[in-house]
Amino acid sequence: MKSAEIPLAPVSHNELQAMAYTDPLTGLGNRYRMRDRARVLSVERASDPAPFTIGIANLDSFKPINDLFGVEAGDEILCQVAHRLKACIPDGATVTRHDGDEFAFVLPLVFERVGAEKFGQMIREVLSAPYDLGDRNVRLSASFGFAIYPFAGEEFEDLLKSAETALYRSKRRGRGQITVYSKEIAQEMKRATQLEQALRNAIISNAIDVHFQPIVSLANNLIVGFEALARWNDADLGFVSPAVFVPLAEERGFIDALSETLLRKAAEAALSWPRELFLSFNLSSAQLMDPGTSSSILAILGRVGLDPHRLELEITETAVMSSADTAHRIIADLRAAGVRISLDDFGTGQSSLGRLRDFIFDKVKIDRAFVSRINSDRASEHIIKAILAMCEGLDLQVVAEGIEDYAEAAALRSLGCAMGQGYYYGKPADSVATLRYLHENYFELAGERENA
Image: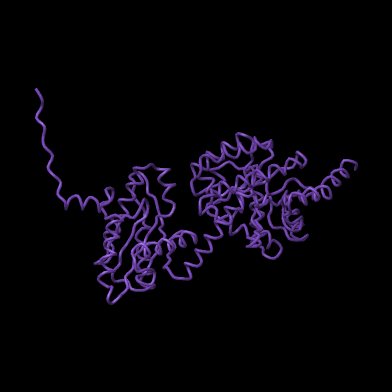
């Protein structure tokens, strides 16, 4: 005998509409509710276009937290964010979950830039308080983009695009930034997009070059290795600084393609050097968040034929902190294959001593900010002394960066610093000039020492 089936109650049109306009996780409205609210406001104000503002808030570095603590913890944080936002938005305003880790606002009573910035500052403060995950607390920051009707667009789609442009500029400037759309910002973002396209084309056409700066033993001035540095000379743009195009590749998500091209070129060049010289190569923070980084690097070395023991990877404290667990696994895998790891710009980031305790490094690079003042500032001299003493106790090698003249080199040598690099020893040069430099400064000196 069949069991009696309980008929489902019919869902009304209003209930279906409410479901279609509601984010199921947080209970906030979704993109459709935001769109309709903005459109209603624009229709109401069409005859007398009084301004109103829409905004988007993006949680900074939410993905690493999601990866570290799990999706359920990430969902819990999003629900806590939604609760805080509902509790603090002004009367008449609307808050919605825009997409993933983004939330959006429609602000009928915010008419100009200063008001939008003040609202962003208030929300930023609200979201910066710790989030409770039971056995742990986590902190987040948020970045904001605002667009004001009708100056940033009269149609919703144009207004939203302007807010997204402003948000993107905030993300480019770092964490916790607030940007209100303007024509000047639109032009700035347009130039960034043009630069991005040119860079993508340069990578595809193999137009990004690698230059090499010598690293020397301070005791005898003999070259011990070279640091690989990216260089880009565009036919239309001219010389583009790596301080501009490397962060751009990170932001737009193609740093892997750029880095793989550079490492391949650098490794191929290193094959023509004496085998005892090492190649130093910089890893970005984005690569230390990608679990596939170690296998990708080792695969490139295998294809080129460069011994992993000749490669030294430079990472910064900030990069390590972005996703510590993933970075730890990448470093362990690379060191197991023979690759050495160097902590770059030591002393300029956060939790320097904690990084040395938690991670296994082979070398520390003293930042040029200290080296440049070694003979003029006693504090810098004592900091360098302390770093050298600490690294000796931890059995870490040390390289001083940015050595510009003989006096700096002599001071570092007298303090017991083993290695250095900087314009005093040689400017970055392409692979052909580097080979010529080796013939002039390595083979002859090495031969003289053997005959001595």
